[in-house]
Length: 255
Ligand code: CO8
Image (cartoon, rainbow, N blue to C red; front, side, top):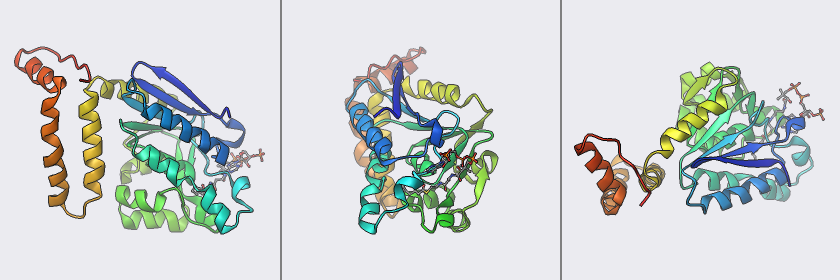
């Protein structure tokens, strides 16, 4: 234990990866800890946004030392996919705050978050092909959906490491910020999101995730059509609309 630190500032929690000696490479033990923390935080009604942060380096990939001698059966047990899926399904918005290297499993961890903020000198890529493997933490599924199949294939087939401005250009990250401002900017964004109704945030996220699993726009819109009316049972909807009509700022209470 001891490679994940949790801090909470207001309704936003920050999960920091703390394994600087290995550039935050993701060992099985580290990911077990992450899994446990995610389970605990997901059950907390106090959290309205979650930031994943790797100081200096987001994560330089899955731990190659841990994987090197794996048989296929052991590789299957080593896989981080269940944990990254748990992160992907985290009930409220998640933000990856990325500095330094975000490679391989590290980039896949960021891709399992809803939003990504990268420092200007952040370096991202899928070097798995250079190790004789391919991404195994959801990268083949999530990267094409973000940047398109051809660009994802280019990244995965070449193992190229790209800069933050290039990642912004292709839509791999939402924002780039000057180095040193990654966490403050993520906290600012989390604070902005957290001011809104938790029920509306949760419902919006679940609707987007469920809609993305539908093959057609019409069936995805049907999910929205089903979920949208439920928000009119909340006090936050009444407050949000009343505040607009009374020309004041709403105060949401997550009820
Ligand atoms: N695994 C284990 N140790 C690592 C890793 C890693 N991924 N990355 C860095 N380290 C260690 C180094 O071994 C070194 O340790 P030591 O001092 O004991 O030798 C220490 O961190 C510092 O690293 P470097 O000396 O290499 O630092 P540099 O600044 O010279 O280089 C690099 C930085 C370019 C990031 C370099 O460390 C590197 O290439 N690292 C490996 C990057 C990589 O290939 N990542 C992908 C790994 S494979 C993967 O992620 C598969 C995901 C599969 C899905 C997940 C489910 C299992």
